[in-house]
Image 1 (cartoon, one colour):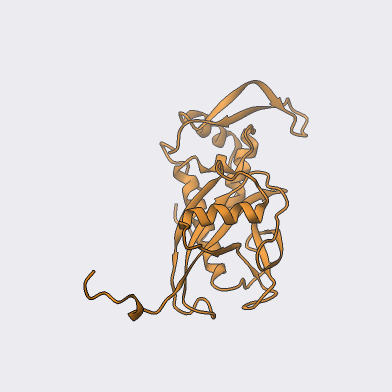
Image 2 (cartoon, one colour):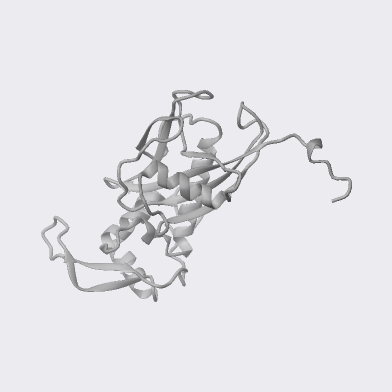
Length: 239
């Protein structure tokens, strides 16, 4: 373009940050890494890294997710762009714009710390505070996004193994929302929603109780919930 001088603009870097969430032992956990270098050496942070010159932000996010989790194939996992964080002072090294992603993992392996991370661990949400950079805000935004999407999409099944009980599915909602749900009402709503779940014929799982084994289901073909499965009204939150 005539008259355009790329050197007239201050250079800046682009990174990806990953808010990776899972359920472990009935509690919501986030994947966090302990920084091994400055800035914020010794502080916990979200996994992520710089976008390479010939790489899209989406490709960088998938690469970082595979590196930090140790999974060889992350193509089937839920990974969605959250938003862009561009405050000029968010990184003390230079101007850094971050494209943040939310990822959901069922039954993940122990993580592998990569890059400048001293270690990586699954820690109960929200984890140690404060996190490095603006990662507290990113993680909170991811949690709110996931909680809201559980109401009107089938996203909850992304936390579940390929075959799951309705009790395990209900636990996803209760854990992310932080509130108990009425079991019969939840079961009725799930089974009345076309394409939400599909029964696994002839399969059941012992749940540790005295009742009969629980039937197994898999994710159905639907992506949206009609009607939505609204979270119960809690103090400070309108119904």
